[in-house]
Length: 175
Ligand SMILES: [Zn+2]
Image: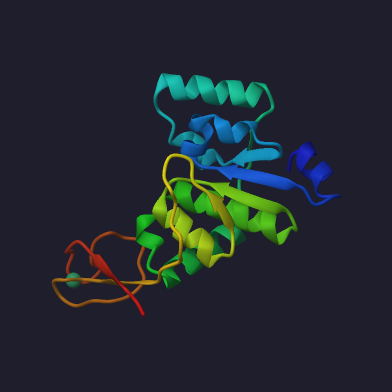
């Protein structure tokens, strides 16, 4: 764990957890508070322009890269499965949700910055506050049931295809 994280844990402070959209929109990084992302989000960054913005954010101490504990990753994946979002979240998506979830449990005031609807929906289910950058953001949490239109399989999976017949999975709102 980094030194700054230890320092912060003495008092409750506002922190932001960013996915790639949050980092590159720029504005959210200038909001007062500490800013974090995860190695998996960094690993998704490919183009040179984005890499330069990231490098600047890191050298100017605007952004710190932290991995969430495995236990938080497992809990978030389980919760995402409960509302039919697990197979729509990448490992990087789950990593920022888990980092935000973990910080909140430590008593921080956390704002998750993401334009991804599945990340936002899962954030609401986890009682996390999120901020959208380029989109309006979802207003209410929805629970979905994941099912196979071909063979009728229903359940929780991190795959986008049916575990029984291999057909692409669909989902419907669960009331
Ligand atoms: Zn099937």
